[in-house]
Image 1: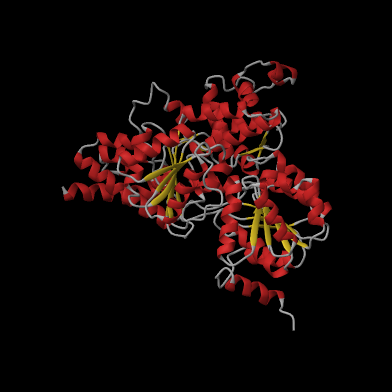
Image 2: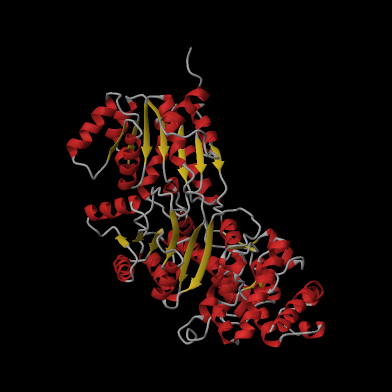
Amino acid sequence: MPTRPDDAKRRVLKEVFGFDAFRPGQEAVVDSLLAGRDVLAVMPTGSGKSLCFQVPALVAGGLAVVVSPLVALMHDQVSALKLAGVTADTINSSKDRAANVEAWRRAAAGETRLLYMAPERLMTERMLAALARLPVSLIAVDEAHCISQWGPAFRPEYEALSRLRGLFPGVPMVALTATADEVTREDIAAKLFSGKVESVVLGFDRPNIRLAVEMKREGKRQLLDFMARHAGESGIVYCLSRKKTEETAAFLCESGIPALPYHAGMDKGARDANQNRFMTEPGLVMVATIAFGMGIDKADVRFVFHADLPGSVEAYYQEIGRAGRDGRPAEAHMLYGLDDIRMRRTFIEEENAGDDRRRREHKRLDALIGYCESPACRRQVLLAYFGETAPPCGHCDVCQDPIERVDGTAEGQLVLAAVAATGQRYGAAHIVDVLRGTATEKATMAGHHNLSLFGAGAERARADWQSLIRQLVAAGFLGLDIAGYGGLRVAERGRALMAGDEAFQYRPDTLRRATKAERKKPSKRESAAGLTASQSALFAALKDLRLRLARERGVPAYAIFPDRSLIEMAQLTPRTPDQFAAIAGVGAAKLRDFAEVFLEAVAAHGTAE
C-alpha cells in the first residue's frame, strides 16, 4: 500500500530534519506543492522557508532545482542537507569545471535530489535542454524579490526566470522571499506565474525583537554603550563600507570585545573562517557589510546594531531578522545621521540603473527616513510599511521613552489638501513647491500656481515640509506609489484627518535639530541631567507611574505624557489641579484623567523627603 502524502511529509520532516511539527505556514506551502500547485511564499526571516521546498522535494522524488542568488548561500544549504543525509549538490562559478561536470553527472544519473544553481547558470539554453530530459519534480526560486523591478534588490539575471513556467509546464514552482511588500509580491506573481499562483503570506511581526533608533552623535561611544548591555552575547554590527567594517572590528577588539570583520573585499578563505567562527563560538560579534547574513541561521544572535543607515525598509527588516531566531528577546538598534543619508543618496545616483529605478530607490530611502523620524511606535510603523496593523508594542524605544510630539493637524490637513488638489499623482518635492509657493516650471505648466493654497505654507522651511510628509506617509495618512513615480495619494486615514475625525502629531524634524550647529545641544534624554538629585528622583518615580498607567490602558507611554511634561512636573512640583493644568502637555482630558494620580505622586515624594 503506497504511503499517503500526509504520512510521507511528516516522516521526512521527522526523520530527515528532526522536527515533530511544521512551523506556521510551512505545511500549507508543502501541501500545495505536493498537490502540483504553484505557490508564492512570503515568510519572515527565520521562519524556515527552506523546508517548504526541501520536504516536498524529498517526498516527490525526482530532481528538485533550486535557484539561489549567492554562491555562499548555496554552499551552506547544500552542506546542511548533506549533513542531514540528503543527496544535494550545486553547480556554480566558484567550482572548477571538473567539479561541476561531476555534479551534473550525479544529477543526470538520478543520484541527486536537490540541485542548486544561480539563475544565469540555469537559464542557459544548454542547461535548460539538459534538464528537460530529466525527471524534474519541483522548481524553487529562493530570494524571489530579486526578480521584481519594484524590489529593493532587483537583479537583471533573475528576469530570465520568467520563462520557467512555460518551459516546465507540469512542474510545480515555489517562489520564496522574506521582504516583499504588496507591489513586489504582485510583480513576482506576474513575472513567474502570469498572476496565477497561491499566496501564503505570514505576518511580518517579530515581537521578540526590541526596536530602537537614535541620531548618530558619537558613533563609537554609542556603540560601546550598547555593547555594555550585551556583554558576552553574539551579535552583528552592520557598517556601510568595507573600510569602516575593518576599523569597527579592530576598535571593538581594542575595547575588549571579541569581534571579526566580514565583507566582500576579503579573501574568501578569511571570510569563510570568520563566518565559521561566528557560527560556532559563543559571544562573538560579527562586524559586516550587507555581504554577510543571507542564509545565516544562528539561533542565539542577541542583537543587530546598524552603525549606519541601511538602504531601505526591506533591507533593514531582513537584516534585523537575523536576531532572535530562537524566539528569546533580542534587540535591533540603529544609528543614523545626515552623512548616512547623503551617502545613500550618492549610492543610488551612482548605481548603474535607469531613472525610474533611481527614483524608486530614493522613495524607499524616504520611507526608511520616515521610520526613523516617526514619533509613533516603531513596530507599528514598520509593520504598516508591509501592510499590517498592530497595537503599540510597549517595548520599543519610542514606547518606553516617548519622543516630544507636536500637534500638526493643521499642517497635515494642508499637505493632504495640496495632494488632493494636484490630482494625487505628484511626489513630495512638487507638493512642497506648491505649499511654499515656488513657481517652478512644473507647477506653472500644471496650473498649480493658481491654486488657492499655493504658498499657504511659505513660512515653513522646505526641510520641515519634507519631514512632515515623510511622517504622514509613515503614519498611514498618505500612500506612496513606489511602483510608479513616487506619487503621493490620500489614504483612508488621511481622509479622516481632512474631515476632522483624526489628529496628526509629528516629531520635530530630528535631522534639522542634529545639524552641526545644534549637535552640541543636549539631547532630550540628556536634558533631564539638569535636574537636582531630588528632582531626578521624582522624575524617575513619575516615569514609573506613567509606564504603569500606559500598561493598564494598553497604550504607549508617550500617550500619557512625554518626558518634557514629566521633567516640568519634577521641577515645578504642582500641588493643585490649577498648577497641574499649567504643565506643558496637560489638556482638559488629561487634567481630568491624570491630575489626581500625578499630584498624589508629587505629594508623596515631598512627604518622603
